[in-house]
Image (cartoon, rainbow, N blue to C red; front, side):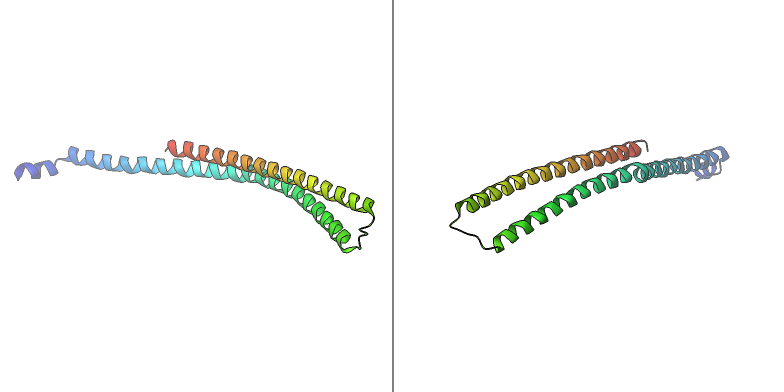
Length: 145
């Protein structure tokens, strides 16, 4: 018992333990400050660079899509107006022009679908690249901790 009481009453040992305890909390505080700083840098980068770029890309692509949808609607109206009009079956030239028209529309449909698919793939690749960049920046921020 006497040895234990002398050990706990020994001032240099107690001061060493107290300073070790305080250093642990100071180190943790510094790591928390670094983490908060990294999060702030990442969020600022996101708000200043990535979001405006995403909005610009979306606005650009949505205007193109809107224009293509309007063309599609006009083509549909043209088709429906031709279907509702009386067709002279005896006149072969009209039926041939109608077949040509339908063939042209199907070709245009394939072209529009191809352009749409390409635009979707382009958007997906751009968003994947931005996602990878954000993940890379987040992983480097957390690795520094």
